[in-house]
View 1 (cartoon, rainbow, N blue to C red):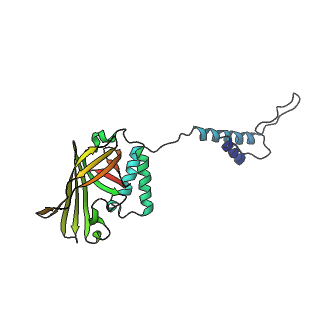
View 2 (view 1 turned 60 degrees about the vertical axis):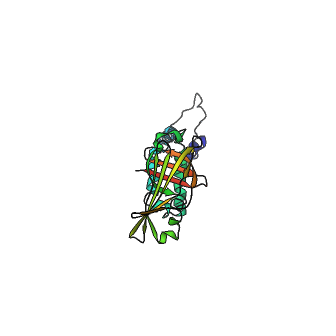
View 3 (view 1 turned 90 degrees about the vertical axis):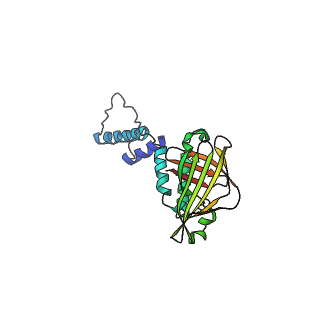
Length: 233
C-alpha cells in the first residue's frame, strides 16, 4: 500500500516537493503554498479512500442467476462453445464454496428437476443425443425426479423428425455413499411411443457428487468428471 501511495503522490505532486520537509530553524520563515497544500490533501484523501473501500464478494444468489443465464435454452449444453463451457465450470466452482456441509442429507435434493446442462451434452439421453442421433431426434425435455426416501426417475422426451414423440424413462434406487456422493442403480430403460412401450437393455449405474443445492438449482459432478446443472421445476 505504501508503494501505491507513493505512486499516487507522483501523479499529484511535482518532483521538487518533499513529503517530509526539514523542520524550520528558529529564525527561518516557512512559506506554504495553498496550491501545494490542496494537492497534498488530495493525495491523502485518495489514499484514505483506497484503503477504506471494502472488497465486495459475489454471493450465491448472483452466482445462481449467472449460471442459469449461461445454461438455460442451450439444448443441455449442446449449443455452447468451448469458452462458454469454461465459464460455466468457473461459476460452478465458485458455487461449491456455498454448498451445505452434507448435501446428501439436505431435503432440498428432493423434487422435480429440469436437466438444463451437462458438460458432456450426450451423457443424458445417451445415443439419442449423439451427433448422429440429433439428426433424427430433437430433445424436447430432460427431467429427473428425486423422491424421498430413495427413488430417482429420469425421463427424456424426444421428437422423431419433428412429428412423433418418443419417451425414454429410467427408474433407479438411490444410495448415499458419504456426505456428498450418491450412487443410483437404474433398472433397464423403458421406451414408449404412443400407447406402445417396451423395456430393453439391462441395469446401469451412476455415481454423482452433489456440489451445490438450494431452492432453485442443484449441481452434480459425475464420476467421470461431467458437470450437471439441474433447475427446479
